[in-house]
View 1: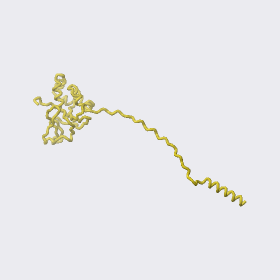
View 2: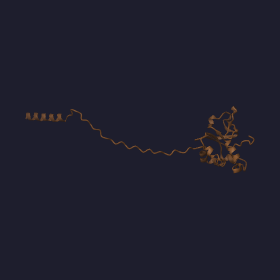
View 3: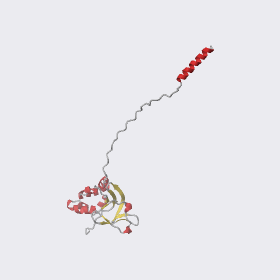
View 4: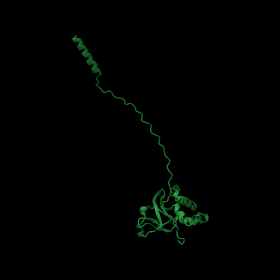
Length: 190
């Protein structure tokens, strides 16, 4: 029986030896599918928001936008600029003497309206932080070719001539808008 047990043990050892790895068997990598790339969706590039676009989007500037259109300045103020516009609100236009606005909007007064509106525009982008102190005594030339006193008063109020800047630094793609509470009327002798 001992020989039978030895024979069985030897056979078991042979089976185990045959099953034990003496060499490593190379493993073939399994191909993994990569997720498909998401298609690139190109979003439309928004059109530049020009000074005219910004003004047209604000109901407080509807009178200004009408005046810009009547003066034929839409294309100019939608151009590359940069421009700084001191923009009167509807309330500022309403404060003009009775009949003044209606008269200015007439086709025969287009030159006068253009002169008034371009008196509100300065070439270049002038942010509120760039405004000089009142005691600096500097003036800014407008697109109309007339001087405009734009400054910070001692009390901190930002002014354009006698108009108060009520909201500053409204940026557009071609410049900046500063909201004013008064329509700036150049002296006719200038």
